[in-house]
Image 1 (cartoon, rainbow, N blue to C red):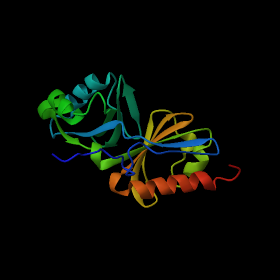
Image 2 (cartoon, rainbow, N blue to C red):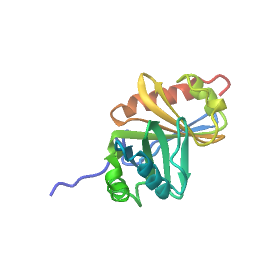
Image 3 (tube, one colour):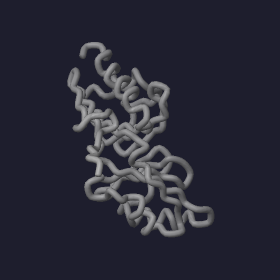
Image 4 (cartoon, rainbow, N blue to C red):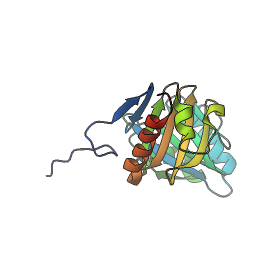
Length: 189
């Protein structure tokens, strides 16, 4: 039997954490992800079942919501990405599939995305160098799709000093490099 060792998206045994100028960039491999897409004719049923899972209404355009351990954000009409701790929900897609039944198509996404958490008072200045999203005006539980370093990404505003950034796992190194370079380039940091 081969001796397999799990690696983070950046290829290390432990998640990478970088600090610069009061801003922290942390690779977060501890998130399970799955997409939910309502099936035609079952949109209302899907939203109702998803609300039961989340403990809150399924979010609308540009929004995210957190309920218990799950967070969901809107990806498109009747489509959401659901995030939860990997340690307790390694089989998130299967669990959602059971709960949503024929009302939705659920797809495992955990290994398709890399998750970075950006924290600190200077996150808006960092993000201004990377994408056209007005981070300073984003409220908590806002979610935006954008391009960072030519990569399709999602940016979730967690609170005044915290963002979660999801990008393609295959480009984790490029996205990390762009985020770290922007952190170092912010004037006065």
